Amino acid sequence: MIKVLHSLFAGSSFLLAFLILTNTQRINIKANKWFASFIICIFLIAFETLLDDWNMSDDSLLLSVISILCCFSIGPLFYLSIVHFTNPNTKWRKRNYLHFFLPLSIALFVIFLFTIVYNKEPNDAEPIIANGIEFTLVTSLITQLLFYPILSYIELLKHKKNIHFFSSNTEKIDLKWLQYLCICILIMIFCWMIEIILDTSDYSLTILSPVVDTVYLSGIFFITYNWSKQKEIYPFNSIQNINDLIVAINTPIEKKKKLIDDNELTDFKSRLLLIMNRKKPFLDCELNLEKLAQEIDTSTHILSYVINNGFNENFYQFVNRYRIEEAKKLIQNTNHLSLLGIGFEVGFNSKTTFNTTFKKITNKTPSEFKKMSSDL
Image (cartoon, rainbow, N blue to C red; front, side, top):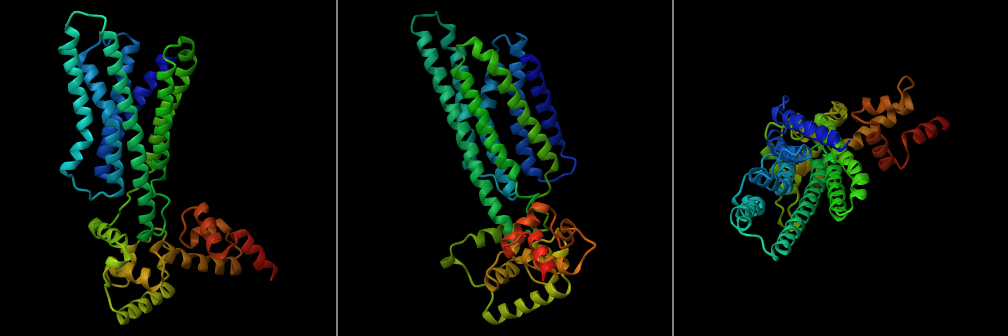
């Protein structure tokens, strides 16, 4: 049973790595290269475990070094993929090499042990030294594997906040599945720690190992399913403009620059309101800051400034307020559309977002609002 699960896990991770590397849709290109490296490391670890199952590893130095490099590289590779998912314009800096200092140092240390220490005659102290080294390696690995998912989760929370400044529908670009993956990784680490703690009990391993291996395999299926659904997060002509905009928005208030004077702000507000009421661009479920900026013939920075300072809202709030007002009109005056149909009609692309946004703005669900309108 365990060998079958290990084979499935290794095969699934190899196939997933291949799919991500080929990336036939050519989306999120930099991020997917890092993410593929993360999955390749998982495959190589799984493959070494598979070789151990069939007694084919022969305590190879090469396999041991590759396995250790992969184990200590999983965290940094996962984090760097998150960084590029949330900011594809990220430049490689010298300090990024520090992420791989620990994996390389430990790999060199292992090579030293194999070539120097273990070629000597055994003595009574060696088991104690070996146990101490193993404890240090395992503790270092667990610490690192806990650190990077938490760091990645924080990056994803920042991303979730930032996308509200340039997108009107965030469900497919909020990377929520990667937040769940961070939690899954922490659960997997917990399972692995239990395996280590119970390693002395054959009975415990017999019961626990299939459960843990099933969790690992489920994790690969989860990644495959969600990665295949992931859209391009920044479908803009100039990603740099959006990055600069995010930096400007997150700048402390006392350091923010005034982009236009009050008269220009009033003029832009009037033009924006005119377009929103006449052309109704909010009905486009793919509406983003760049598209709307083109409608009023201005830059994304100016438009964002007008929305933030002229209406005290971010782009997401501004557009969805119009969508809800349009939905209210349709609920009151239309009988041939269902509530979900109305949600799609006004620019939402999911039932959950429509209901949540409607309730937040009107303090009523669409159903409650319809019933109230019918009773009047």
